[in-house]
Length: 86
Image (tube, rainbow, N blue to C red):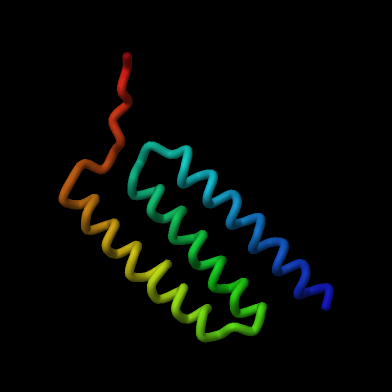
């Protein structure tokens, strides 16, 4: 039981760190990877909560397909966000 709590806390901490990284980085590919890690950790948490159908859907759509679509869109545009100086 204690192992399950430790894994849950580690997943939540990793989700928060990845979300902060995705928000703060100016490299769009790194932001997409951070967002993908958040979705992947959410799917692990769903698996821990005994919802394997939701976990598989989150992993396939949230971490897989969304990441792929965002990376294709970034490839067709510019990779780095431009800093606007006023």
